Image 1: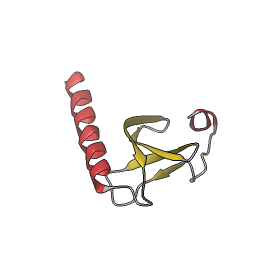
Image 2 (image 1 turned 90 degrees about the vertical axis):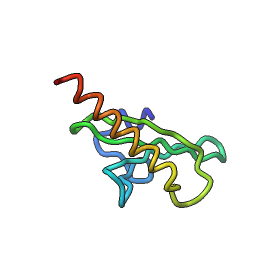
Image 3 (image 1 turned 30 degrees about the vertical axis):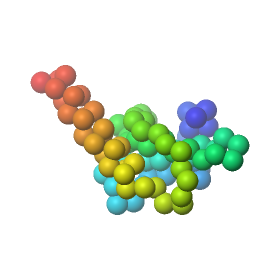
Image 4 (image 1 turned 90 degrees about the horizontal axis):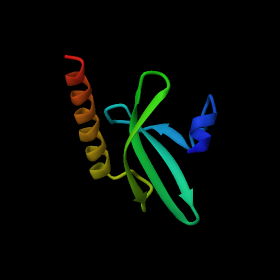
Length: 85
């Protein structure tokens, strides 16, 4: 996470946009032999909203995890809009 905070340009091996999603991004974290993924979205140019994490056991990000993240993104954006109405 410190790498994501400090670098102006983050290597794709740690931070990448997920294709065929509602503009979701994935942060990859390796702890020993365990791989974790934190999913979220960008708000503006410099803010990343992380709203879901899971331990990754396959190469491809499971659709279930993507659906959870997209639903949470919609909920976040809806609640944010309500604050400004």
